[in-house]
Length: 113
Image (cartoon, rainbow, N blue to C red; front, side, top):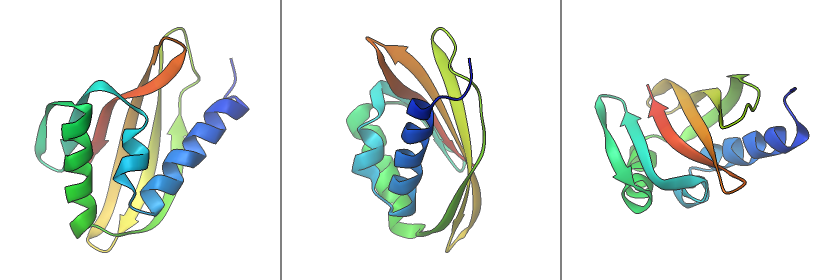
């Protein structure tokens, strides 16, 4: 299956949320539990806790540019998207893993490294 318009639209929405440092918009795509790794801190968090961690990250890291580097095609249950993010504090690699749940693609893993 090819990278569909639907996935492209999803990728664009998430990139825009990162570009505007909008943790709430990104959290709308979180599953109920999310594995989060930001720099050297990592753990399993609820959707609400993960949003707070991301908000905290954005307070000290303002995005100046984001670019999609790669993606996998949606298979039966999961796919991922990787971005390169430039911020005032440095350049980061963003890894997002999505799983299908009740017809929705939800972020189950977020890594900022």
